[in-house]
Amino acid sequence: MEVFNGVKVIEEFEAMTKDAERVQRESLKKILEENGSAEYLQKLGLNGRTDPESYKSCVPIVTHKDLETCIHRIADGDSSPILTGKPITTISLSSGTTQGKPKFVPFNDKLMETTVQIYKTSFAFRNREFPIGKGKALQFIYSSKQFKTKGGLAAGTVTTNVFSSPQYKIIMKEIQSLSCSPDEVIFGSDFDQSLYCHLLCGLIFWDEIQLISSTFAHSILLAFRKFEQVWEELCADIRTGSLSDRITVPAIRTAMSKLLKPNPELADLIYNKCTGLSNWSGLIPEIFPNVKYIYGIMTGSMEPYLKKLRHYAREVPLLSGDYGASEGWIGANINPKLAPELATYVVLPNIGYFEFLPLSVNTEDQVQDKTHPTFPGADCKPVGLTDVKVGEEYEVVITNFAGLYRCRLGDVVKVTGFHNSTPEIKFVCRINLILNINIDKNTEKDLQIAVEEAAKLLAGEKLEVVDYTSLVELSVEPGHYVIFWELSGEGSEEVLSECCTCLDQSFVDPGYVISRKVNTIGALELRVVRKGTFQKILDHYLALGSAVSQFKTPRCVGPTNNVVLQILCSNVVKSYLSTAFQ
Ligand code: AMP
Figure 1 (cartoon, rainbow, N blue to C red):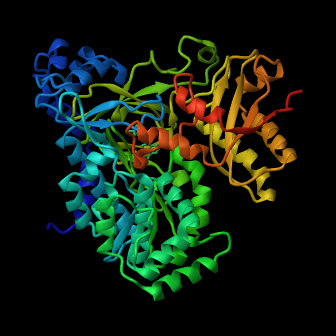
Figure 2: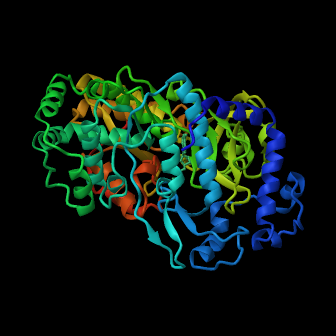
Figure 3: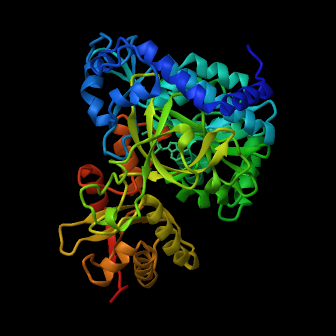
């Protein structure tokens, strides 16, 4: 096994980022040389040219939807060179939380290589600041349902494709943080059972656990919320050495029986630690005293979970993971010391060819131009990786090694600076998660800020917002925003009504404020949903083939997302109307 050499990884990264423009040209050249024979590129008349100028003049900017016909032909078994020179044998399923259903995205060994590269890069920087000793990782990772497409291609979420790759194991061994859970748990067919067993494995190896991680931070939170419910059962399993009846999957039972032995002393220890905690504050360091940090993507739609995560983690640092998508990786977090709210990602110039569509959402013209409500940058010309401007916001356009050419990712990023000659970006939001009725425009970030502001009013009642989402209600005149909240307990009428008004007042976008004042947007509505509603939404996505590892609560439910809408609406227990702007 190769020994991980962080110094070398950092040196290579520094050299490459000093020469970002040349590396980008080379990456594009490689992509086009490898895939020049693909039907898609052939039709566009590149005629073997591989320079960025020719590429940009021949190849159109597209969205995933434009490529669907090609991707479905591949998935249906057409192995001719359609998007790539070599046939695609694996399909990734995106989480689909934005559109309401998972998208198919081609996956190949090249994408796996870039995954290994980004893991190694951010680990090298992380390990320099937060070295971990020999030990284990408590990783809340889960595979999705894997299936074969009509044409016999393996399909699963990108994280599943990564976790099941032999290269993943090799790199995890190399960086000394093998998961404490057996594969049967990670690849188990039942999420609840896998989660329970991850927790149990964590407790069995409690003093060896060096880090706690997941792909997206939401899974970590989900795990510790579960811990609060099942800790006594976990202790009982450890005391007796026999696994709870809730675990019914034979492969998981067999794998766990090899690890679980009667250990009354450990059971007592954990029991005492748990009973000694006040409201589970500091649960993580108490149970896992050797944990150096908690790691997972914590930006974007994960930010709302940070408060609760800090409650469990107390002094243990929270480190955000990297930035990527099923379409490919984009940037590494090389400043792990920054709080997740400030995390930025340095774009790796050799893992794809990147362009950036400038967004200038705030000009009066564009706010009023209803022809481009969701893609304000659609008519703008994209700029190259090294030509972006600090302080500006862009939509990312990716060309990858697996058949996507100039494909819009639908993510908004802000350039915060440069690392050598490659940009450092901050994730802002999904571009189409915008609350918009007329001249108003609120992003998922604006919604997050409003929810955080209103949730402050719950502190006095010792309540918290477990999760939230929103909706634009247009079936009544005038249209208005609806915010759905799941709460940790029952709130008083008075406080919830105040929260509703506060939500309304916390959207400070001028278009919204004016519209509210003249009543072209009606009073905001807060709908409180039953406990467990967001778990039902998660279950719905899992049934569609999504994986918990990649799950992101949709922060705005569009009209195409009928099932989620139905889950929400059928679970409303109370609703309130704002009294602001009266
Ligand atoms: P998926 O659709 O499952 O492939 O998820 C990819 C999406 O997750 C990206 O397009 C982003 O919107 C989001 N995402 C991935 N990494 C990050 C990150 N570091 N910060 C915020 N959002 C992220």
